[in-house]
Length: 313
View 1 (cartoon, helix red, strand yellow):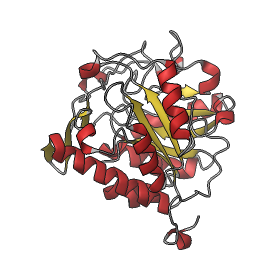
View 2 (tube, helix red, strand yellow; view 1 turned 45 degrees about the vertical axis):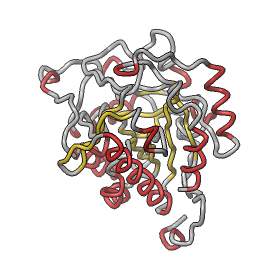
View 3 (cartoon, helix red, strand yellow; view 1 turned 135 degrees about the vertical axis):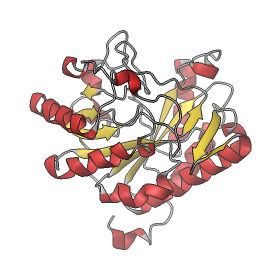
View 4 (spheres, one colour; view 1 turned 60 degrees about the horizontal axis):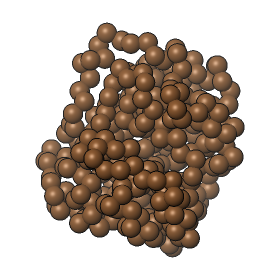
């Protein structure tokens, strides 16, 4: 879909993007092609009750962790090194360890990579708070696939999931925070879809909190132009450490229900912010296998200086 036809898009917008080699959009690609997650984004602008970010972490397979945070220069060197080692790498992504759009280094890295690695799909993961503010810059950086984490479309339910939101220098809490976040998520989703981006919505399934509500999330994001949905079972951490991890039966039941509304991606490995490789081949997130290459696991003396708390947008 080109820009001229974007304004006429009604309901669901189908992106004119080849997703056959994107391992996080295509089941077949998941086992044949790889991605490079470059951890250039340490800062975050919201606090989810299930999230703990960790750095210098070699032994956990989950979002929000990385061996170290890298600069745009280091990121590009990592990409050069990785592509030379494995020609199956087809996606360049930023998925943390904080929020991609809360860090200037994210778009700087994508802009610099655009000319050097034109064959790589550029992919960004975000909580969506800053999407309306930065959608022009995202488009200009050549980002064509976008993942937004949307865990609720009812502020009353979202209040149970988010502790606070930091937006334009102000911290919001409670219903006000969740109303703001949801408004920006859905506005950004719709705008991204209208511009022809392929939008995947990630939703964390939290037993007793939003398990019954994800069908409403599915309907809403579909109506706003989402291409595919990825329901991720909760890993009980932080304030949600007391909750049970959802059973495979519950996860499958919710996915099957939502699949009647929007296509479901069922192969997510809950990858690290520095994962590199073919996810379906390497066993990322399975057992005790850690999906980072040895050449990236070298510590820098200054990695402890990175700020881990939520920072101003």
